[in-house]
Length: 407
Image 1 (cartoon, rainbow, N blue to C red):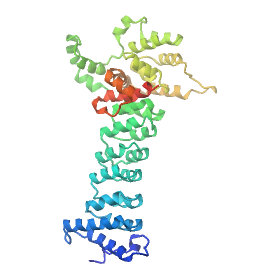
Image 2: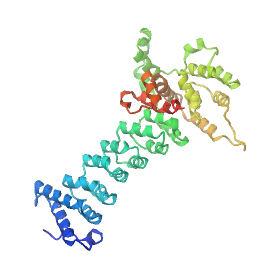
Image 3: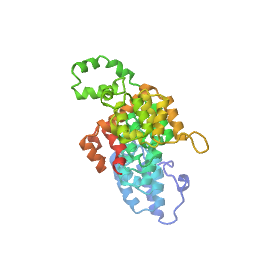
Image 4: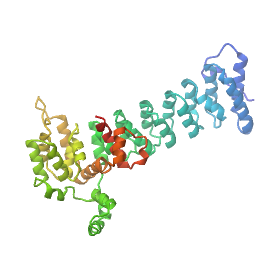
C-alpha cells in the first residue's frame, strides 16, 4: 500500500487519540483499503471491507469516526452501508460527506433527510445541484431554516408540488415570501395567492412581475366568441375560460338588475354610506363575485382596490371615493400622505388595464368559481393534505380563504 494512502492525524487536521492504538491503526488501514482504486480492489472486496469498517465504527469514538469520514469524503465510490452510517452520524461527522462527497446519490440524500436530524437537512440543503426529489423531501418537514436554505440555493431544482407547499407554509412564515419570489419555478398561480399575506414590497413585485397580459390568448380565441354566442353560451367549460380571456371587465347584464346606473354611481353611493348590499352591487357591476369583492374590500393593505378600479376602467377619483368609503385615511396626523394610500396610488399608476384585469380575474376565478362544496368543506376542515385532488385555482382558494373560515 502506497504512503499516499496512509494519512496520519496531523495530515487530516485532527487530534491524535492516545489510547487503543491498534484500533486506531486498523480503522485507518481499512479506510485506506476502501479508498483503493478499482484497479486494486474489486467491488465485492470493497463491500466486505466496508461492512467490517461499519462494525468497528459503531463502537468507535466520535474523533475516530470523524477521521474516517474525512478520509472517505472525497471518494467517487463508497460502500452503501458505510455511507448510510456516516450520513446519519453526528452533524460534525456527517458534514464532511455532505460538503465534499460528490458521489452521494439522490437515494442517499433522501434517506438521510428522512432519518437524520434537522441539522443534517440544513447541510443537505446547501449542497450544489439538489434534484427535485431531494428538495421536495427537505421541504416536506416544514422546517423554516431548511426551507430558507433550499430557496437560497440557486443550484437547487424545485418541483411545482414543492413550490406550492412552500407557498402554503409562507402564510405562517411571511419571511419565505421574498425568497419564493426569487425562485424561477414560482408561477402566477402561486404568486397571486401568496399576495394576500405578502408584505408591501413583495406585493409590488408580485403585481409587476406576474400581472401578465392576455393579448395572445385574445388573439387566438377572437373567433371563438361568436361561436360560443351562437351556442347561447351553454358550454360551462368554454364560457368560464372565455370570461377570463375577454377584454370587457364590467358585467353589463348586472346593470339592468342594479339600482345603480353604473359602477361609478355605486362607488359614489358607498362613499355616502357603505353597506353589505352596496359592496355586493360593486362586485356584480365589476364582473366579480361578492366573495371576491369582500376579499378585496377587506384587505388591510389596500392594493386590491387599485387593481379593482384599474381593471374596470374607473378613474383615480373613483379610487379615492372607494378609499374614503372604506373610512381609510389619506393623510397622517402630521399632514403627510398615508403609506398605505401612497402604495395604492402607486399600484394604480403602475398597472396597465389588461394586466390588472388578469390579476382581478384570477382572484375571482380562484376565490369564487373554484369553491365547490368539497372545497368549502376542505377549507373549513383545514384539509390541505389531499391538495392533488384539486385544480390550481381550487388550491389557491384553499390557501387564501382558510384563515378567513377559521375566524
